[in-house]
Length: 173
Length: 173
DNA sequence: ACACTCATGTAAGCTGTTACATGATTAA
DNA sequence: TTAATCATGTAACAGCTTACATGAGTGT
Image 1: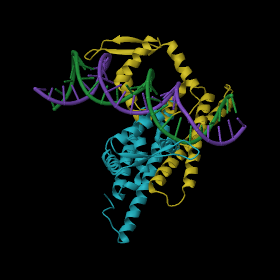
Image 2 (image 1 turned 90 degrees about the vertical axis):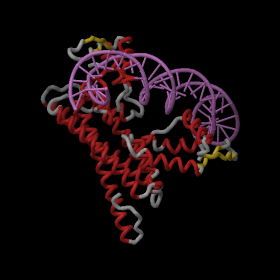
Image 3 (image 1 turned 180 degrees about the vertical axis):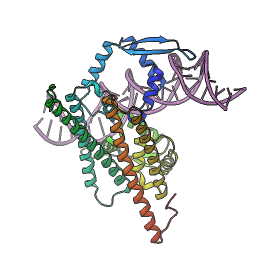
């Protein structure tokens, strides 16, 4: 893709992962070239400005995979989680399940601490706190539901894969 | 509160609104003093380090209210919305409802565009895109449900307030 | 003639984090 | 004595946005 294409693509996902400004995107692309994680090919456009089409190199793919494998730990912000989700194709079923499970644990923890807070200030405490807590609990609950659903589907898929004899080393991990 | 107290309080809400590091918090407090939006009182602690207790001034309260009233517009990020929610006590019922409604509109728009994308790449497109879209749709849906619930409660409350004769200029906004 | 989309980029500046410094008190 | 919590702060740096510059084509 070209820088412009990347911007356009990410823009449509702004709500989930945000999108970079040209002031950060273009310098990053130059850095990637410098580190040989990507290459460019200048395509002179007919009836339009020439475009620089970037392609990922083997080294780039490797670096990406390392990023995917590595930062499994820590309090992944939502953005990081969704980006992993978008790149789910690069995961084995097992490690995808591990990622989902990890997120599930984190969100469950957050919900638990919100619930504790709610119990702590039980009763007629400020409208604001109650609203914010209710909101947080609703979102956390919904996310847990979705994650459980996705995990369920994954394990069912792994099961049927096994039955069909194509069993890789997936299943429970 | 003291800077340390503020940090501790915000830390428990990290998931919803994030929390600042000391490197940003303390300079901000100094700025607030400079602009006379807050005052300090140094309380020498018995058996513990002395603490600087900050209090908001009238000017500070006014600036806060202006912030609350003002930034109703634009694509409020989640953080801004939750902060308003936490300070809901400072809103009239009508303007609180307006805030919720505005958020509702925004989230509805986001969900609509995600749905469009989902239809656009219908079928066997990458697992990743499907997962991320499903995730986004689930979260957006849950948020809309919560917002509708809260809006419903608010309007019911406004109705009963009116019936009880305590009718302020609330209701539909 | 004006504005808008395509397409790339630079420079200045704001905001925030990381990492450190300080210093007292309490628990292992 | 080593680490941890309480409590405040600074300095260097990383990351990102804003605003601008450039330039061609397309529509009103």
